[in-house]
Image (cartoon, rainbow, N blue to C red):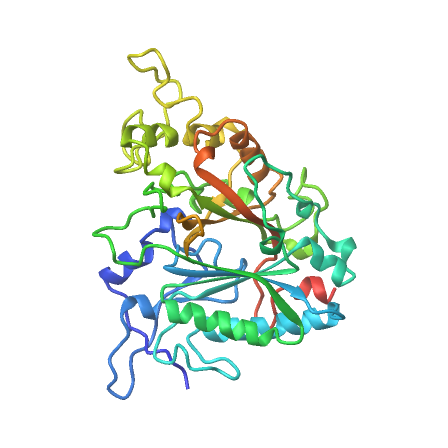
Length: 419
């Protein structure tokens, strides 16, 4: 029996909910995003639009990359169990794909726990990736992309190796906390005997419908976060975010791997925000650190949130209005040879640390066709003089190859594991 009781149509309120926080992710719904269909049976009431929204499992790309931001998220890395190899990994990905497909459609999985018994799909997405060490454990080192070379060290790093990297990576997102936890629990049970959890992190975003109109999400510093993200409507979006479909199209990229066609690379960073220090700054100083107005995300040079930065504008004091070390200036694509990445983060709060400060910040997830052309050059530049650096600390890191979406009848990663 399906636990879906979907709306026949998603009205204006539902459409608005779909776009809440979208600019922090991709800014637009994509072909991954399906609409709720069907009506409640047996006289039971229809689900609200938030619960009824379904994202399709099968497709050219995996879900959870261009899907609009969800209210709840879990990031979890697994290491293959001792003795497990390619055969066991293939069986695990087959189980995981079957579970993800069922849960994303609002159906129970094998051995379902009933945690989300009364909920609809709630925009659930499950995304799978492979870490560098996965290829060693499975005897597939010849198939490992060059884009998985280790990230360089950065001065702001204070990385905990126990919470970094991993053989396998799973990203879970949903607009309901129980639906997200249900998927996390189901996938963990599926992994029993084949892989063990290496680390797990929990995140959140603003809930759909929490604002009067669709708006870009804010982070825990109160800043609008995701304004300058690439958008699927951009003519070069696919080239920047997804691996090309053929070696010919991938000219200039090192070591094209056919099994990664249509995939992307995820850089994952747990970034602790030193909120006590940040909140001591005046509003004026905070805005100069970022280079944007806090109220609406507009550049300090004027306009609205989407107005381009005027990096050459000089103020009455003879200095650039957007300071030379402002975060928005240093990270702007035009300042980095066009380097761009699709940021799709979650905020986190893991309680109060022993020193009394909040253990809170950003689970930074960014997507790109090549991290050596996306994340790395931008982070190197930020590392050399970003005004935001004194207020953040990178505490964990991971880089994962996320293959393209599974076709009907396939499981995620099949083209790698069975080739």
